[in-house]
Amino acid sequence: MSAPHELTAEQCLAALRSGDTTATDLVEAALARVEDDRWGSFLAHDADRARERAREIDAMPERPPLGGVPIAIKDALSTRDLPTTSGSKILEGFRPVYTATCVDRLERAGAIVIGKTNMDEFAMGSSTENSAYQVTRNPWDAERVPGGSSGGSAAAVAAFQAPWALGSDTGGSIRQPAALCGIVGMKPTYGAVSRYGLIAFASSLDQVGPFARTVRDSALLLSHIVGRDEMDSTSLDWAEPIRLPEATDLRGVRVGVVEELMGEGIEPGVRAAVEVAFDRVRDMGATIERVSLPTSGYGIATYYLLAPAECSANLARFDGIRYGAHLDDVAGDLLEHYEQVRGRGFGPEVKRRIMLGTFALASGYYDAYYVRAQKVRTLIRRDFEAAFAKVDYLMSPTSPTTAFPLGERVSDPYSMYLSDVCTIPVSLAGIPAISIPCGLSEGLPVGLQIAGPAFSENGLFDVAYALEQALAFDPSPPGVA
Image (cartoon, rainbow, N blue to C red; front, side, top):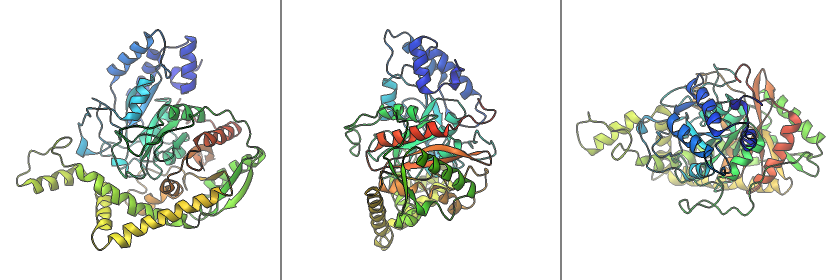
């Protein structure tokens, strides 16, 4: 048997059932990796609580479904009595009094939370360099970014610190870091997973989803968190259970290659790796045709009006009065306190987006910017509907580039925003998409994005799994395992 930290979640469960390992063994192996956190993946962990839970599960006469498998949680998800900062100083030291629904469901199923992972502040970023606490490094190259905003979760899984993790995806924050770290990342249909306990960035876009090293692990994790939650009015009933994929070929599947996401701005090495994946798709029996999403080119502009507008409203609640940062050295009235707390507590990127969103919502600009962006979002969604009338799934690169050097884009917001050019249209349409590694470019992973119509998660997992087996990508960064 492989070392405990090298096991996939599915392998962990098999070893637990056979008696070859225990929850305590798995947690100890994970904690050893977390405590030697050379990649800066984690912001907080509670080893004592994880060990206690492992002992409890090991003593149970019948193991729960997830039987003691360790999991890492993005710091945007509330965890009772465990620090939850969303990567921001304004929430430094905050310990929620409740746990997010999706995390609670996993814990009830037997998963053991080993820690909270680093992220761009309030999920605003594509490199995890906007964290107020530390920089996370890519396990494939420690001088490069892991992607963002869920970079800590992606790095933790890629570095074998946990077999799987939860992240959140607003414009690509699961799929893009999954691509850059050479693992699997899934953004479900909007509403599939409860957002109760997720610290909001843009409420009409935010969605929780899984990171894993295999497609089957990703499906297994998602199966335990989808479904209606009375605490989230946008959550959906889930008629068809998420099942583990077993497809071995793609006969009869119609695949569309998105023309607008294969041209200018896509690195040659990324394009070459994705084209090889397309050839493999053909070899497996699928038909491929070029399709167009004419308004997808407006995705970045649309997103950076709508998402900041929503963040401007959502982040208005952070004032340092009831929880989080509080300043005792502020003289003056309540307004002065607000200005000081928010001025010191929010980082530059968060301030930038709050100001942009407030401007877009201001009287005199609302119709010209926010309303127009909503109309374009509708056009983007209709483009996807037209494409899915012709094909079953859409494929493209997940990220236009491989992992870029730390610091390269920090002072160039527009260049940073373009990191999500392939993922944002899918988010605006509210449909599911998965990123799987499809090869290397100059020694760095390349991600392939597969998108489907709403509620097509099972089909996406089938396609992704069949292709994963054919590509046989090794998700182990050199020298890490």
